[in-house]
Length: 311
Image (cartoon, rainbow, N blue to C red; front, side, top):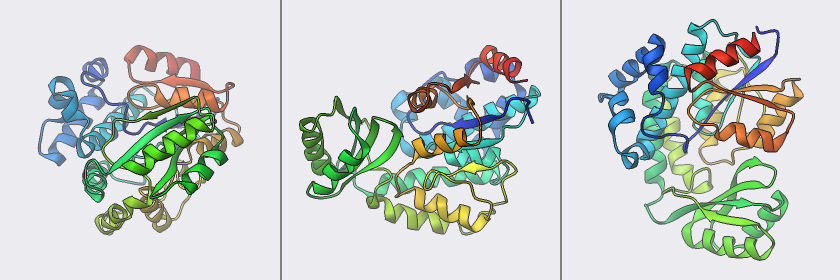
């Protein structure tokens, strides 16, 4: 383990973009091998899609999830290929929790690629397109957001506690729109609808959870070699059956990202590596605690810098 205790965190949907990881793919054989393995599982050329496909195609939930999982695992393998030390903890945001479990040795990569494609399909079909929505709420206390959502007619709830003052709500479209108006009136600085087509992490996703449970029934889960902090309860777990249950619950439960990062901090860690495309989590983590130091692995030069700093 590194002299500096670190945590690796893995992003969820929203970090994908056409052309990502081109330099890493050219530099590291482990990255090329990872995308080839994912393509063999899915039956199409994932790397071709990432580099030359349309952004709209990349944004389809059933495509985005295996693409981001593969991207994160590829960068983790590149880190290992270059002699990077194992972190003390891992965590992933929503889909990223699957990436964390693969990199922690709890899930086989090929199993996870197939599983998250199904997860994306289940999530997309749980609520008809147009009937569900999500919105980011900036600058309002978590408790106040919960109160207003509870008082709004229909189904709407806080589903991503991303950082203090940054929460995502989701539910039926009309309910989300009503909640946005009430939250602005209550003092929210911003309330922005998000470009997604389903109300992720709400109780409306329970049918998706039921289908995911069926799909996971035959998937082998091992004790993680590196502890993973789970979204549902911001704690680690070693029992494979309980991990399976947490992955199912996660699909219809709020993502407690602030709690996950605070659990990392409570373990005496201030160096956090974002293992995946983009820097979304690094931004959230700084909002949670300005003392945290963030690193990225997306480009070879920043991976090399992280290796040097954390050795």
